[in-house]
Image (cartoon, rainbow, N blue to C red; front, side, top):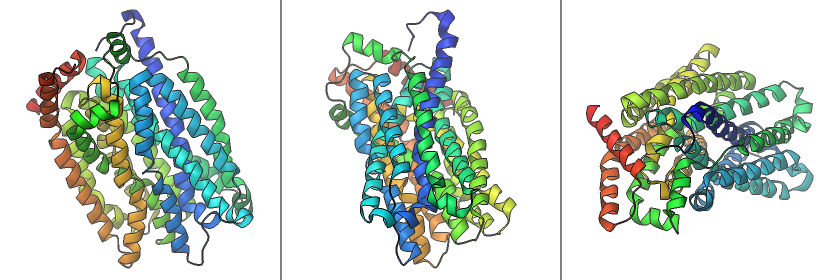
Length: 459
């Protein structure tokens, strides 16, 4: 895929794309993870109080997981807009929605103040967040991927994934800071500060994205008239196998993340009696290491091949499922840090750094936004927000034993390995079928398929 910009300005363009994709992604995920962190330590008492703390925590996690089933709807809506009118406009809409919902959460009354209206309003705000993040990821990914030089697509495709860990890092640090307040102050107004203050980051993100042009790939498709009339219909009719591959790949990228970064907070503080600030600091350290490792893994995938690196990371996550909980069970601060840093910072990055580019290479430009978003968000719904809920339920059913949770992670690893192993054959089958039907299959995508096949064969 070639850019319409002059060669001498390519470095500047690349810089703008990096900043635009990364900043917006990081801000949206910061808003998203504020809720995830608060769900583990605040919302159970303030919005879902009950006589049984476990029930309150489960209800809090239900509100967290519920929106993961909303994300696919947001993905379909905004992917349709993205494949019809462009990536840039869609990203401005999603960032605005996310910012507004996050600030509103910081201003909500609690259950003690307005009763059942409090959790209803909280869930409503979370649904808006889910719709926004459902469309954000695909747009941020394609903004980077469709601008990327041919030999740097792995690196560029990893940029939005850096936004995930940066957003989580900022959210965790924000809650760690307000958690240092006296308990009365934290519970009264301190927990609200990160939500309200996020409006500043949203405004910065909108300003940065306003300076970006539409991607060259979408511009070329629009000028040639190669734009799908109904992207979701074409995707489900001709690319359903690729969507299944993307869903299968996503489950091992999302469930371990929420186990290593979200569930660990309630598990380590509630079951193992670690200090909340210690656990949040460990998660921050893991997120920092992961942020550094993601672009390294993305660049490595440009030489080793995406499937090889993805499957390697998946195997490592599966093998680490039991040692993760064994380290936590040592009740030592260094072991807590080791568990989170190894899981989140070392073994997870090879998977998350490659998933965006790997799935983008399956779909043609005309339905790429819809295809990658649908696979990603359905996979997130099945194994993302549900992971802390499932893990909490397994603990309650098996006398606080972590063994079923480890088995659950290993099973997801097997699913993802099978899915990614099928990616190459599925891609070739569907591209051949489209050409036989006379449906345009863009040249850039065909070249990417051929190149990846050569890399796969060498690996």
